[in-house]
Amino acid sequence: LASIMAGAVASLVLVPMESTRIRMVTDASFEGIGLLRGLGKLVDEAGLVQTLTVGLGAMLAKQVPYTFGKQVSFDVVAKFLYGILNNPSQSTANLAETISKSVSPEFIKWTVSVLSAMIASVMACLMSQPGDVILTETYKGGEGDDTKKRGLAEVSSSIFARNSEDGVALALTGFFTGLQARFVHVGVIITSQLVIYDLVKQLLGLPATGSH
Image 1 (cartoon, rainbow, N blue to C red):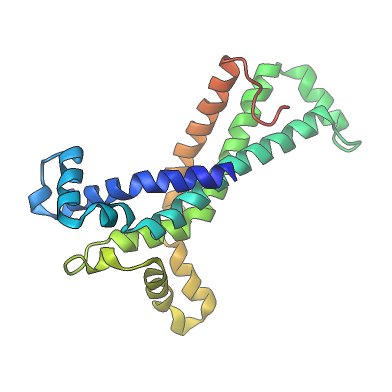
Image 2 (cartoon, rainbow, N blue to C red):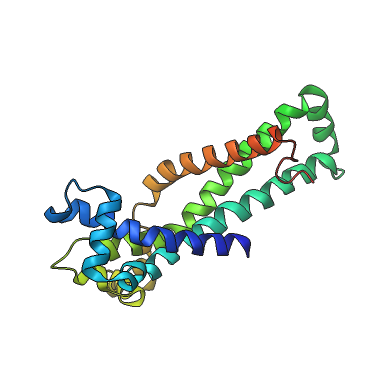
């Protein structure tokens, strides 16, 4: 629940910034004016409500699964790995004992953090990729501002319809376009973020994620 709320709050903050960024790239009147001035100009042109809400559905479709997949899977995987090490079953007892004797506790914590973060990055990419495709389509330039004003349902339908003649399975693959590149790009970012997050927690005297 906390991760879902965090993703929703992040969406509310990102929507006006994303709208401003797109206009700075595609609209000559926004060129070179900076983010804050661009945001003010956008509010003057479109109004505060539209600035805060256009593309909100698409942003939620990306950010909520992204945050949920990243944080929850990181906690769950780390707890699972620590469970194997701290309370091993008969089949894993020898392995756990060997690991505990051959490496330091700090190295074990670092290894668990890295492995958990890597798996969390994969889960976050898989869960948020459809939303990322929808978000890209929502903000993609078109004639005038029509593309940006389309709602979540309309954009999703247009993506699905591209390959719908070839069957439902192929139609759904449209929501995972570019997934391999995103595994590399977002995977490195998320893994780095979560490992640093866990290391800072430990430096502050807090237990490592999943260890308690």
